[in-house]
Amino acid sequence: MTTLVFCIILLAGAYLAGLVGSLTGLGGGVVIIPLLTLIFHIDIRYAIGAALLASIATSSGAASAYVKEGITNIRLGMFLEIATTIGAVVGALIAVYTPTNTIAIMFGSILIFSAAMTLRKKNQEALAEGSKLSYLLKLNNSYPTKEGNVEYKLKNVGAGFSIMAVAGVLSGLLGIGSGALKVLAMDSTMRIPFKVSTTTSNFMIGVTAAASAVVYLQRGYMDPGLAFPVILGVLGGAFTGSKLLTRIDPKALRLIFCLAITFVAVEMIYNGYNHKF
Image (cartoon, rainbow, N blue to C red):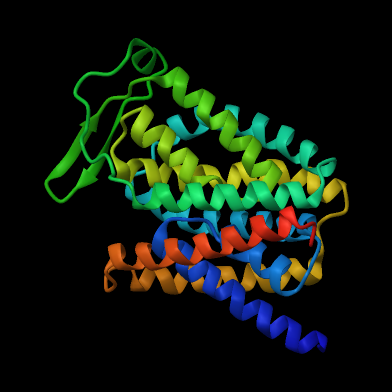
């Protein structure tokens, strides 16, 4: 395969990753890493490095729009980033010394978890009463709707903070945004409305990925030849996805995407057990 053909295929794959990632709420890494490892047989650590850079680029672009609309809870996101950033650095350091087959098996398991979380019922209710810690840290906020601003309160701040630390470790270890786990912590544990959870998670993903990327960069796992077409393709796909979002049935799309990543997850776990990475 020539370099030109490789770049074209990678660009197309990254575009698809950005497209489905923006339409389903999952990060592009769940598509990029299997593409690079299963099809191109690239070392999974280099694949993770490229996926982290793609996460930073897409998160930066999407997050700015949601912050401007006033949906993202910036104070909450920065508070929870303390946990995810520490976890991300720890995860990236662990990944350097972890066998690639073990990383592949863990990645496959997280893909299945992400698929299940995508299909679960979402929390749409805003709490009228929050925990003492939420008032103390001034984390309660509001978000705009067609009917006006909706006030919401938070619960279980400590539990949500702990889950964020786990999400950070997985992000650094596997090169994914851990968006499913972050949304789970805010949506199910802290009882934040789903719209706020997803946009705040999107805001956080880039910061978490940046913390992990520093470790991968220092260890030499950032290949510009992989990163450039991946970032370019993912950004193009994410932009297209944002335009198509209102025209496509999200439930049908989520179902199709969940079936696809479950198939990829089984493939990665199988290859990991058989030491094919």
